[in-house]
Length: 342
Image 1 (cartoon, one colour):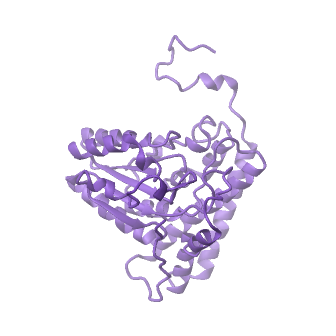
Image 2: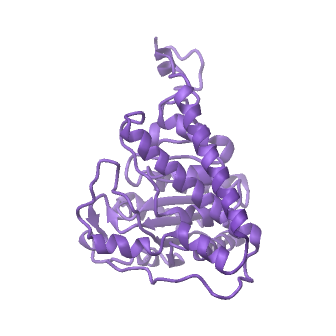
Image 3: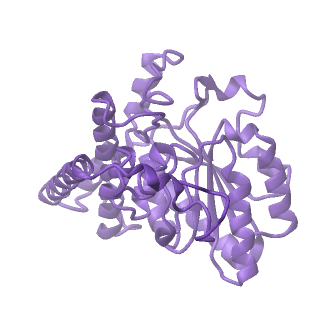
C-alpha cells in the first residue's frame, strides 16, 4: 500500500494561514478525537450498540472542510461520519445522544452511529449502504444547479465504495450535465479489512475520474493545510461553472473498520508509521513550534473540549429513550397517511 510522504512541522513561522485558521483546525480535530474516544468508552460499557465506525486518524479532512467550503454547501457521506457531522456544527450533545439512541439525538434516536442527519446544517448523512451516497450527492448537486445557486454538494465515500457501479454512473451524469459536485474519496487504505491493492489494479483511485475527463487529484489527508488547499481549488473550479471535481484524499484510520474489528490484517509497523503523522499532534506541534499560538491557548482549547465532551456524555446518559409510538412518526409528509397504524 502506498504511503503518504511524512511532512514534519515547519521550523519557519507560517505566513499563509493566520492564527484563527490554525486554531479552528486544531479545535475541530481535537473535538472529533475526544468525541470518538468517548464513543469507544461508551461502546465498551454497552451504552452504544450496533455498528460503530470511528473517525480517529482522519480528522484533518474534516478540519479542511470547515475552512474550504461554505456552510450552506450540502454534504453527504458514508457511515464513518461522526467527525464530519461535528465539523458541520451538529452539537456534541445531539451527536452523542444519537449514539445512545435517545430522543434528544440529531435524528431522535432512530438513526444511531451510521445515520446522523441535520437539515439546518446542510448535512445529509450518514449512509449505511456502501456507495449509496454517491448518486444521492449527485442528485443534490443537480438540485442546486436547478435552483440556480452557486452551492456545491460535497459527496464523500471510502476506497471500497470507489468500486461500486453507482460511482461510474454518477461520474458520467455529473460530467454530462456539468453538475456542481465535489467528489471526495477518503482513502484510508482498507475497505473493511481488504487493502486497496487487493480490490483493483488501479491503486491510485483518483485516476478513475480521468476516464471521464473529470479534474482529479491525490491529496495528503494527514495535514489540514493540504486538505484545505485542494478543497478550495476544487470548490473554486466548481463555482466557476466548470463542472465536477474529484479528490482522492490519502488518510489512515488508527482503529479497526468498526469497533468489533481487531485489524489483524495490518502490521504494527504500518500503524505506528502513520501514528507518527497524527494530524492532531502534528498540528499542535506546528502551532507551538511556529509560535502561532501559546501553550496556554492550546491548554484552554483542550480544557474546553474536555468539558464539552463530558457534558455531551452526561446529556446522553440523562436523556430519555423515544417512546415506542415514535416508530410511526416522521415516516411520511402526509400526517394522516392511511396505511400506517400504531
